[in-house]
Amino acid sequence: MRGLVRQAPLVIQVTERFRELIQDGSWPLGEKIPGEHHLAGQLGVSRGTVREALRALSISGLLEPRVGDGTYVRATDEITGVLVRDEREAGLTTVLDVRGGLEAAAARIAARCARPEAVDALEEALAARALAHERRDRAGYVAADAAFHRGVVVASGNPLLLRLFDAVEGVINQSIEETAVFPEDPGVRDAHAAILRAIRAGDADGAVAASWGLIDGVKEGM
Image 1 (cartoon, one colour):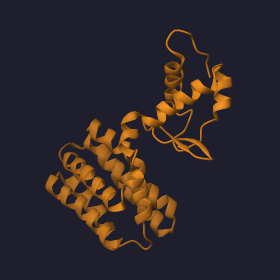
Image 2 (image 1 turned 90 degrees about the horizontal axis):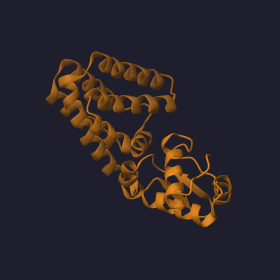
Image 3 (image 1 turned 180 degrees about the vertical axis):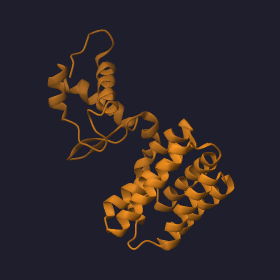
């Protein structure tokens, strides 16, 4: 970690340095960061300065202090931090409703303008999902399912929708993990295929209906 210059207030400099470490992946999402004593020694500042910087990033939602354990990276930017700050208060049904809204909007746009390679990526994700299900590979199944849903948003070509999706991706993936059932409900499987068919066919209304149909099917199976 590079040293600090004595121009801006030290707390601001340290806060920015820690933010950089989060954003460039040096402090990975979900991982525990080094302790105050270690960080203070690396930067040549007091533990009080480090503590204030960590507190500022905790308030913004980037870090999460856990009593008796340490401090963990909770988000990679402030937008994500604000959106997921109270994620533990959100029930599964609430998360599914958010998923439905984002994905239905993205599916509608994707049906109108998706590039062929984006549609092919969705097909590959569904194939991987089916293969993982056949092999009873739960981790692979969840990963492929998550890739499909993010792929729908990518296919929309809308960068803001993707930013919003990525901001709540953690809770979305958690909802996928919590609702994954083996063997899966055929209706849920068919709803995924229906989303892909509608996007490939340019059927915007069908893509929206299939997206919400999927969410309704998942809710029924809860």
